[in-house]
Length: 302
Image 1 (spheres, helix red, strand yellow):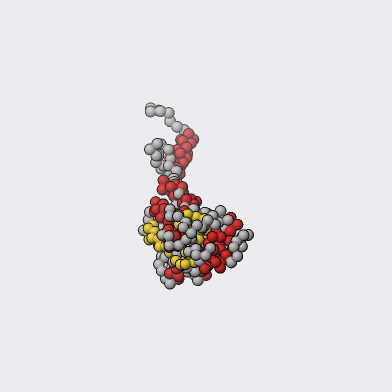
Image 2 (cartoon, one colour; image 1 turned 90 degrees about the vertical axis):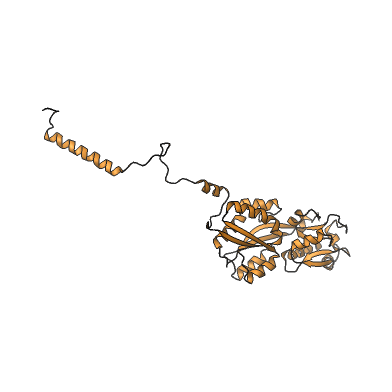
């Protein structure tokens, strides 16, 4: 036959079957996936730079809508909160943080009375626990950092205070905080320990109390009085002493050391609970704890 050999019936049938199989396979495969510019197939999930950065900096994951958080914090946290706030603004730029500091006891009272706080950072565990008990927090309070106590005197040290026992000398002017302020409780604990040390003068605790000439609203006000020379000595947090160039410290024996525990909680009536929790969680993370450490605070239990 012209144009090529004629297929027999069996051969024609085999050819049709083979063609049908090929067509079926091609149909099942569907259209080919588009290749990347480099010619490789793009994987179905690729980590974006922002996701990688979030993982590297412990970035929280709240809503990305603009959020204003109000943080009520102990006066002794005032200095360290500024760099913490600045760093968090880089990590979570959608969050604006407003910080209000004062005596922890006064801040707790304001929250109980309806003040619009989102996060409460206290210089003790008692005040946050009181809010938890009253049902005014979203969840339990969390330990934040530890602090230590120290004795400060003006740099010139006019009263010649060189040891804790000197606080009981007649005429020494001691500046303290109000009864409800956490530093007062810690100072009382320290005085009790000092009074129990071998060689401590008789009636040390009573003599110390008699030498208190003023009681201030918070620990920062106590430090300010000593800086101005309006008092001879005060018991404050070690971090407050480090932050001042106008005072010097008097060593406390290790056996009398008092640890101040700070705790934080999310205020239950906050309109931004997710973001408030994220900020408090970040404060407990390694990056924030390193910043705390640069100001003399310690991680809880360290």
